[in-house]
Length: 131
Length: 74
Image 1 (cartoon, rainbow over the protein chains, first blue to last red):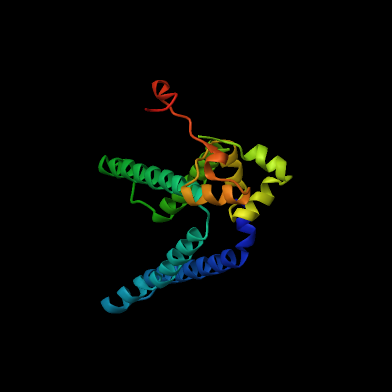
Image 2: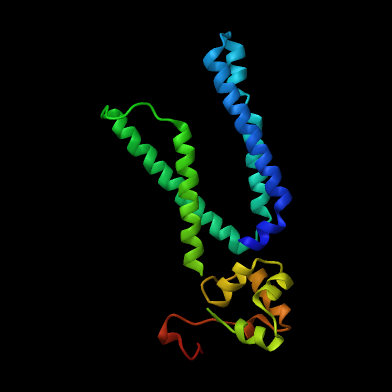
C-alpha cells in the first residue's frame, strides 16, 4: 500500500518512536529484574513497566488500521489471520516438543519475530491474491 | 461480479491513481476492484459509480452463478 503509507508518514514515525521507547523500557525492565535485588512489589512494578508502551502501540496500530480503506483492511485482516494461526500452531508444536523434553523453555522474543515474519508472509499472500 | 470501470475510466481519461484519489481509496483497491478480484462494499460501489456520474448498476454487473436463473424470474 505505498500511496497511503506515504501519506501516513507522521503516524508511522510516531509508531516507530513509541515502538522504540516501548522496546527500550522492555529491555530496561528485563535487565533490572535480572540484575537488581528488589522486593516483591517493586519487582511487579518493574515487570509491568512495559505495559503502558505496549498499550500505546496497540492504540496507534488500531488508529492506523481505521484510516485504511476497505480493501487494505481486508488485506491486513488476512495477514493477521495467517500470523495469528501460524504463530499459534508453532507455539503449540513447541509446547508438545517441550512435553517430549526435546527443547528448552520458549523464548518469547522468537514468538514475536515469528509473528512478524508470518504477518509479512500473510500480507504478501493477500496482496498477490487480489492482484 | 463484473464491472465497466476500465472502459469508463478510459472514457474519462483517468488513470487508476486519478480514480483512487477521487473516491478516497488506495490505487491497489482500484486495481483489485477493476480486475474483478475484489468486490467492493456498497458505499465504495456507490462512490465509484458517482465518480463516473453513473448508477451502480451501470458500472457493476451481477453475474448469476446459477445458469437456470438466467433470463430472470417471473
